[in-house]
Length: 212
Image (cartoon, rainbow, N blue to C red; front, side, top):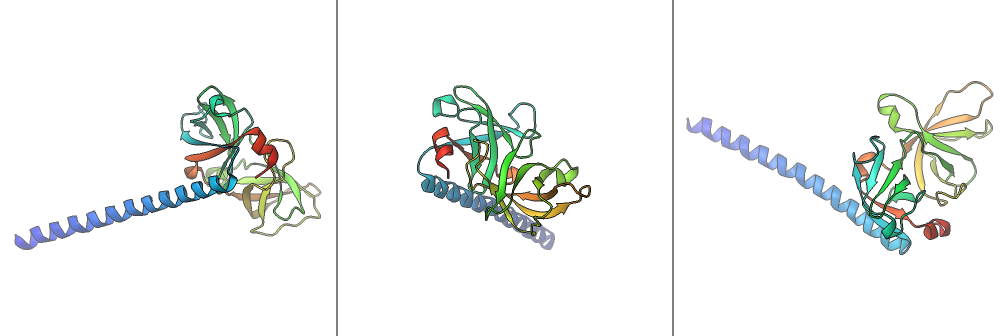
């Protein structure tokens, strides 16, 4: 009986230690993200509106988010939404205290983009795949003569008057097969993961024009 009870107690202790370890890992990850957010805000200094992203409270679409900032904070429609890792999306609707933004997997998301060295330009849009591939992006309209390598960083180009130049969007992971003679299409791994869209920054029009 003593051995049986001692075994149960040892199991409870081990389970407790494991649970605390998992919680600690989550806290450490959250602390690291908060440090990145603070560092990012310090680097930009002005023209940014911090906002909590309330996922699942958008327009009935899993790829929209409600942001806890609105007109009273200087947020306007078409304002870029960014995170320390890169581009999140764009504000679509605004009221006095809240706003609705589309994120990069949304079917309406488009961004004029270029490779980080500025040598190749194209348009980034959601990948219309199934399963896990639905959470990838496509770099479209790349000339046939431009062959891009795996791992190349793609950033916003600043064209189109929505997203400032130089915001990371994703990294090339593969080329999509297309009809012969058509422009090339590349798959991108997004810079920002959906689970990380919890605390974001909204750029004011002045900051967007000035760049980041």
